[in-house]
Image 1 (tube, each protein chain N blue to C red):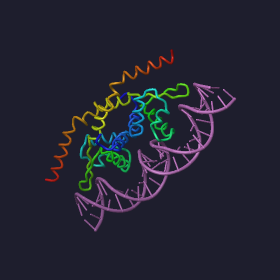
Image 2 (cartoon, helix red, strand yellow):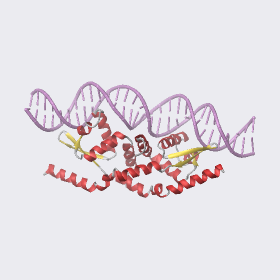
Image 3 (cartoon, helix red, strand yellow):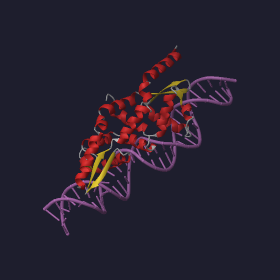
Image 4 (cartoon, chains in turn green, blue, brown, orange):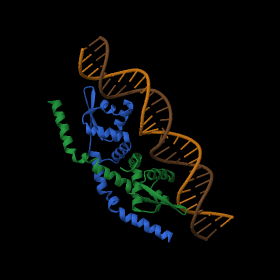
Length: 114
Length: 114
DNA sequence: TTAATATGTAACCTTAAGGTTACATATGAG
DNA sequence: CTCATATGTAACCTTAAGGTTACATATTAA
């Protein structure tokens, strides 16, 4: 809500790839791990992993800091929390109104068919 | 959980565009509207809107049915519900463990700096 | 039939995603 | 210094996103 709309775009797009969700899981379960640690879990090239990491960082789903020659990775819960909050409020009708909407659609179908 | 992993990819990617989220809002608020109704809210060409609709349908966020020459659009809450459920269970550590993780990172920083 | 409406399809363009290999740099250890 | 390690950068490829215009089809109405 307080973030630029682009941020949400980046977050959704970053999550829209199974490899990146996997990276996010790895970093979440191993905070402070380095790029090569993540690479060990993939058959992909390191550059490929780094490109995914870049998209995750652009989305602020991952933050990193250089320590010596290594780059330490941490996941950042804030953007997902933001989307979660948004969905439980702004998109609440998706859950609350679901049965109503299905009923509406069935009724409309009946009108056409009967 | 019961869906193919590709579905979640499609849903996230479909949501990763402000225009498509807007389309989703329009269809949600006006169930049964046709393609041109959606187009009226956009300065984009109809074909552009149709391409977005296609991605939304690929993600099953929107379903449609032909009625005469018109195509009636409905939003489908199921995939978002699925992600919501997944996030409140599988990704629960993102919320529950957030403060713990931040504490962990601060401690680690202190170690390095002191 | 003719015309307007609503959607569909084709072809094209530009940019970004998602990868690769090869090479360059920075750092830590001996 | 030298070598291994960890990351960064460059160049390249293929496919998909995100748009456009032009044309084709299907339906409704006069």
